[in-house]
Image 1 (cartoon, rainbow, N blue to C red):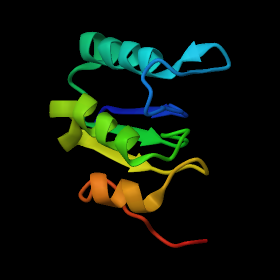
Image 2 (image 1 turned 180 degrees about the vertical axis):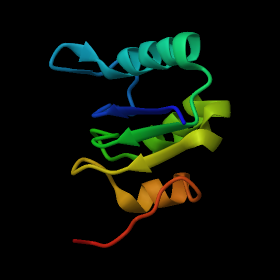
Image 3 (image 1 turned 45 degrees about the vertical axis):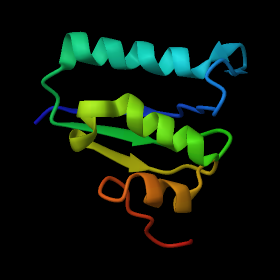
Length: 101
């Protein structure tokens, strides 16, 4: 079984927004391109928080769209910059809100 984990995406609704000088959407899509090219046969892609730096619903929706056909092989684990309500709404089969603790 091939499992890939990516973490701390810190995505923003504004796809041109940078964090510490890094445009996070550009970085994320470059990582996806690398995965597609070199590890397209992965069984599971685990995306761990912080996923959305701005905790905005459109950010999670854009992530959903960007993952596209990969989504069926993805699971998401939130970080402290993530909105569990929006994750649950956007990824009902790929995210479990767990407990509030």
